[in-house]
Length: 106
Image (cartoon, rainbow, N blue to C red; front, side):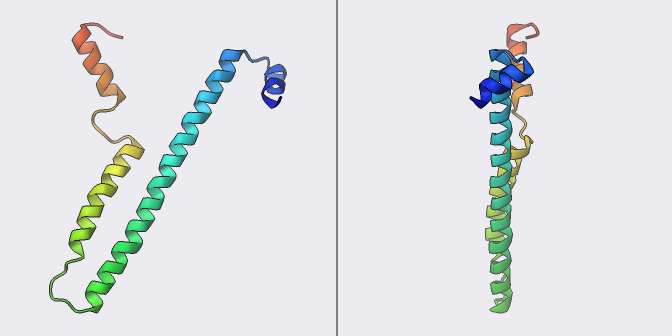
């Protein structure tokens, strides 16, 4: 009922409503991915800080907490690359490769 009312008030077509829904779904997905990254980052900071504190508190001569920080840090960096679109093989790269193989612009 709300969608029909919105459509009548604004004079939108069915296609405009479908486009709006797709945009909203995309925005919601991006926000969820960003939230997941921030949760992951917060967990990393808390756990790695605790490991370093424990490592220093126990007065162990070797700083072993670096290894979990590096391993998890690589995973966190990959997660950030996915969320913020920093990967080299994105949509632009795919389009370029298709155009290259077709020998024309899309």
